[in-house]
Image 1 (tube, rainbow, N blue to C red):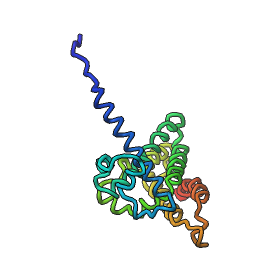
Image 2 (cartoon, rainbow, N blue to C red):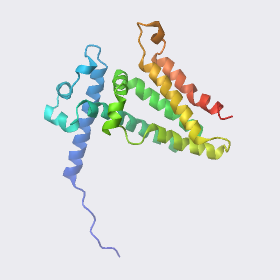
Image 3 (cartoon, rainbow, N blue to C red):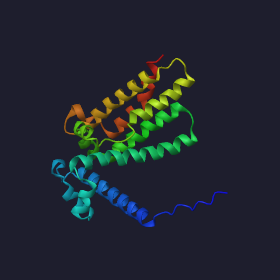
Amino acid sequence: MDMQPEKKIDGRSLRAQRTYDEVHTKLVSTATEMYNNPLIENNKITVSSIAKNASVSVATAYNHFPDNKLDILGSIFKLGFEEVIIEYGSFIELNHDPKDQIDEFFRLITEKIIGLGNAVRYAFFNINDILESGKWIQGEPYDVLLSTCVKLADQNPGIDPKKLAEEAFSNYNGRLFLWMRFNPNFDLWAKFTDDWFRNESKLNFDKALKLQK
């Protein structure tokens, strides 16, 4: 009989981690709100200003965002994608159809992007700096898409999962770029609204799938 003592859970460590996570979420939410505030210039947003608006000490904010802007923008991506993955995980537990899973994945990402609004627009325009800094999200959305395309290909032997994933991902990013450029003051960009982005996202995977036939 195994008589080894059970490992004790360090309550203080759990509370400290929970407090850290709560403050981090508060800071990221505040940053997102500030990026979406038309009265605040995005390039003027700093760790200090986020701390002030979140009612958090500047020292604490820098503990969360030591690399300033890159940490802020990277955290917006990470937290948003983590929330998408949680919702997506709940969906695939109930629906095992790969096609439905992919459609839902694009829907969830689209709604998250729209919800983040100008925060994600500003972040995407700084994407190269975020990538080079290593602040990008863990578990690239493309990886999730490819793994689900593989499941779909297992059921449909004529499908090339890699080509399908690349086509769907590149098309989606093209629509995303147009949505990012939305500007109601210019006819060329005025049509790329949130609803336009939603509708295009719904059709995105079906269009990529048709190219496989």
